[in-house]
Image 1 (tube, rainbow, N blue to C red):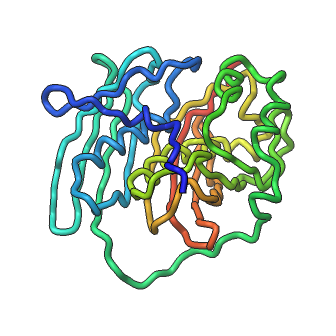
Image 2: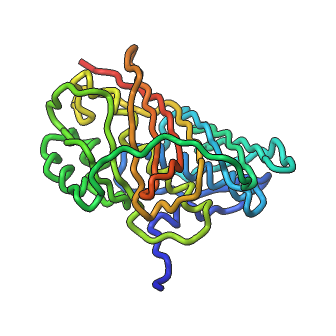
Length: 286
């Protein structure tokens, strides 16, 4: 077999600093601010490094405190709260200089056997029967504001396939539900921790804007100021992030310039592998 190829590897090349701080270099690139999913995944990776092998994350909860910069390194300080017989708890602070940009709490659990019940996987077309999201985005670039173009007119390393029609401009009002197939384009290694942090990275895309669908507001609207506020992620069963996963999303509420998105992630064989919740800012500017 070919060796794994991972274009995300540099995001997780930590340099150990004084007092237990882990640093990653500035990501650079054209973005106006750091992608939240990147910092989320890096904070989870920093916590994973402090837990014994085989004890995997089962949940993490993050707050995006302020926008991160692409021209500065990020320092991650991990606090070891507990190491029990089967669980470990960690807290992570991500800073750029004196600025706190993210806090994360994570819990880790040794694998255990037990009875299983789960939601049924929706009956949707398979990923290879759907157009690549890259094609949809490319056609919409001329109508996007500059900060959207900068983010989407690049290879994000993830293959997304929208199940429902994906509107970028003047969307019709629709129920607050949608689904995407996705997978990391590069083949990853076999370590479960690697797949968990890459799922965390991808889980920050699209979920927040589900609450805009009943309002007829486009995620690429020139007057929309949107940003992730917090993010919760639960890992249920083993999976590979470089194989197709179905991300089903809904939103129970949007109002007061905020929206809540919920997600369930299925492996292609129907197993529920993760759950997601995220609140975000959806402020309409004049």
